Image (cartoon, rainbow, N blue to C red; front, side, top):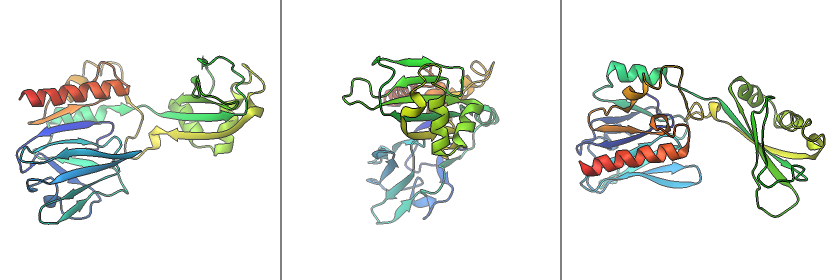
Length: 266
């Protein structure tokens, strides 16, 4: 099972038998999640810094998130090292395996295709600091990203979804900038000529997430969502895909805090 934008909160015995990492790893899994000694720790390298997956000091609790994961390193008292690969997504094999219903629900859930494109313009032709715009062209939403920041140049960030996101992701930076800026011509015909640079990210091409956020199909919210919320033994699940505030970081945090609180309560 690939974990995309999913947080697993586990409180198992010291053997960590319920979570076994698989994939392009170096070292042996038995040196990692299964049977590591008191005082072992697991660090998770993330975009923008280093975050802790968990700490084992007799309590044997660990929090695993693959949303920002590049890899994992574990060290034991014996000096052995277990390293997760930075060259591929993070997979977790459940032992015992997920129920057929849980596995089927996870396989059915898809994630949205989103292309985020931030264009630098030599002049803030949109004038209003709180500028935003909804469009029926390639990008569906534009907003001012340098709001209340000094300077003449400014940035408008645009989001495209679905097939339009795939179209933009397939272009060169230069052509993508022409498309995104050109779609603003009806608003201000100076926009294409003022575009200076573009920074883009296509979440559907991210190997660790396969998309931006969960995209429930009709009937799935009350169909597979309750199944995905079910604990698996001593493993609890959390993430934006399970939140009422679905699709946003707030939802991921809210469900993570809820799972952690339930563990503390026992």
